[in-house]
Length: 415
Ligand SMILES: Nc1nc2c(c(=O)[nH]1)N[C@H]1C(S)=C(S)[C@@H](COP(=O)(O)O)O[C@H]1N2
Ligand SMILES: [Mo]
Picture (cartoon, helix red, strand yellow):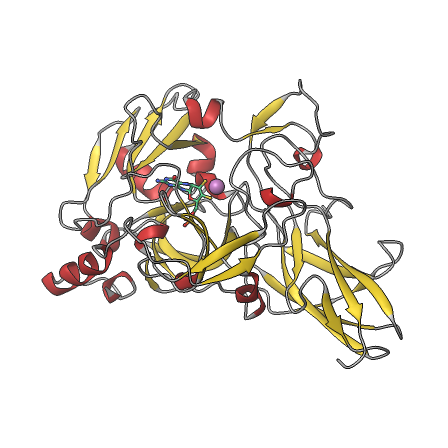
């Protein structure tokens, strides 16, 4: 499987079998999954989920749903570093018909539609015929933190763990489009994967990017994640990486690219994943009629990761606070901490810069009182000058949560 990381060379028969073997593990029939429980801290609702290790190529994950798999990353993982390990990286599929294995030799990436010539690329060609690019980028579900929406909204009730940062390696979508030759008049580029809807009338999962975005030279067809081939559940063998954009566009098991001479008006672009056309997609709960647009660029967020909400800490002592921040579609400019509900802020120090689309660590310290409780706020501002909004946002889809997080601590004796 290392060929996904190796300099160009020949594929070997052995690596084919090796990769397919891993992918072929019983995927959807995982039964004995409930081991211990994890509390996501969702307000006013069932907040506990089983932890599972039953999914192939995955370590301990929070089980949101078995089929199709929805696996959440436990928050502790984000306290370890800025790269999310592949075996702890969250998983989300819309439809249950996800292949349990991919035949690498038979696999083709097709480019068709409004192009000079339709092409079909083998994995070998993808791995060897194009210039490689590599960068860190955060993959975050549009519905990350939906379980924290108040009032609650319909949809998967994620805590904050439907996100992860990886080092992605692949080729430019632009270069692949150029090989087919995009005709003038192209409008959207639509991507499809190997997964299928179960019901014949259910819409296959397809997402589109505007042609200029698709050809910006940054959007990547990735074949490696943290220097290894993609885990099957994260889209083996190829996935789209759209840095700075929500992961609904990051089509997994990418096999079909269709250049359209008209705007993509199918379900997943025109009906699903719509946000209010307001700052941070925020509207007052209950608002019915509002202008909408497809979800797009990410916005800044930050999370204290070294303390749990409700944690007991030492009285009258310095308390270290650290966590991770993301800038969204621009780098992290600063992270600030507040212990007076946002009346005053002090700058945290920032860790190594992994690029504008990556997680960045922050650290600071406060003095705890002699007794009582304290609420710690963290606020990220990105290089476009956009800061997290002061309160949790709301919209009916449960998308784009980015409000300032609050971590309550209790100062206790005997700690
Ligand atoms: N083929 C395919 N790609 C897909 C999806 C899907 O259902 N099918 N879901 C999207 C959504 S909504 C998310 S959040 C991300 C999840 O990526 P991950 O499972 O690698 O974390 O995949 C995206 N790409
Ligand atoms: Mo998502």
